[in-house]
Length: 329
Image (cartoon, rainbow, N blue to C red; front, side, top):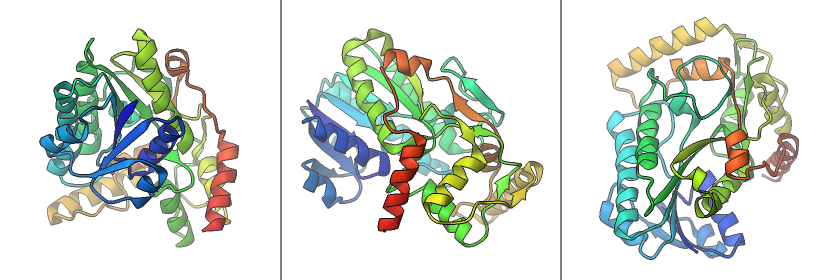
């Protein structure tokens, strides 16, 4: 198949591209920067901005499916930037699907679309969208996911995946942040760290996207639906962080900060940053305080049944691969 991957130069995008190429698909990547490695692998690369509808339409000419992975992540920033990167971009992808008669669209969403600051223990896809968003990332990703699922039809079959806390070799987000803060002696648990969380090794997150395309081709029950994706191995937050630190040959985190204090500090910092118009992310926000201290694990029954999803790499194996990668670097 001829397949377009938006955000192909990103952490998840690259993993999806690699797996698609391994299956002998013709892959076109669309991203803002130049990534020579993608061309070395055999992908066709297009540099562009998803805010430009005509560029998106042109890049996807002749494609059978689009993996819309690109997004503006993070918990802080200008609302218009998030809206353009997450909502307008998705609208343009949908327009391209319509213009080019593309049959399948796989959208990378996030569990944050249902997060309201309380514990999530074994929830499934019947959980409603949050009515209390802490930031515009949540708000715009929820809007984009709804647009994608609403667009599902006989002409365009759509699906949304919600991978949680992706990590692994090459991770530019979670792993380096944990290592940096630990190295500076500033890493702390919010609460006692006993809250259980799901995470997702990078290759499993990519695999779920490949399986989602197959499901759209073969299983009508998957059309127009969202699915939680993880390693299906919920573990305590402190255990997850300490396994990352062990992989980096760093001591375990022992310092803690009370949940209430972290939340209060986040609220104060958000107010100050808004008043000063600062664009960089505060060291703590209300969203981060809640994310670090509440349970986040999901019932993957739907993904297992309808996408035939089964994690290929366990957390323990993934940590071995992460350690080897960190040592090599």
